Length: 203
Image (cartoon, one colour):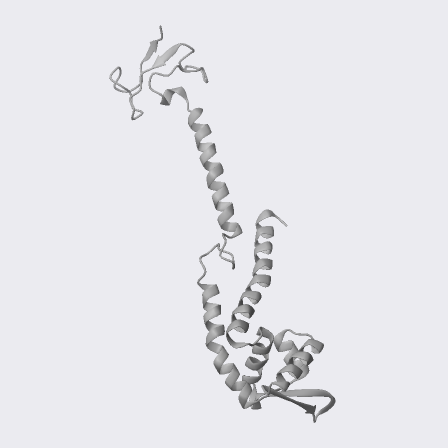
């Protein structure tokens, strides 16, 4: 990866880890639901008859089949979903949303929406924990480096830009060592000449 690709990849990995955790923390604290349970309720509410096969539900929620089974079993114990055998596939099971599960979803939705909007409105370059992001730190570091470089360039300004400074020979026809150049503060020729700076021998 080049530096730009690596910075993008690292930022993406931080978002993939930090954002779900932030959303899960907000939801669990306010409603008692985990993001996995919330995702199950959402997907069941969006399909016909509010029912899905467990394999399809696992794919929709990006959970493994074993993980979705544990989540649905726990939700069934709370009365949020019902689980039954699939009449079309004896090896499969179906999960359906109960009225209580729909009420839980309706109550949790505003919290999840507010949490998502809070993450979206976070100032650009800021991490989920509120600290400056990598992009901000890089810009600050670049600004400090640029400032140091500017200071160094000022110290190395050509003598022609410094009124009364001793010029150093840097090209053919330029003032030599020990010669002074009369230049006004604006950089224009001074009173000694209308169109070009007059060279005066230093004493």
